Length: 119
Image (tube, rainbow, N blue to C red; front, side, top):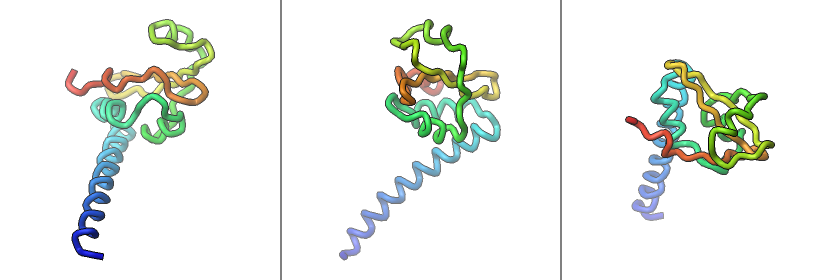
């Protein structure tokens, strides 16, 4: 194999590893310090509608808390169904919790732009 091919493969692998390392660093900051900026980064960069609840929990590094009484949350906007389930992550160091809605264990009505950093 020519040398340039192995360098290209290594550089692609290196970029992927850096991305994973960055995500792990933010996840650790969120888990250990309840860092609000780390929570925002995870929401903005690692989550998207269509993810399974298990994958979302993996991104946070912990399971969310099932919200038995989530009718109030579903009534606040969005196109939610009464059968959708709400889970809470947090609170962060500022006391903020994030509620995410799942339909059939899939994240729905989630827009990462709602968590723009610096707002």
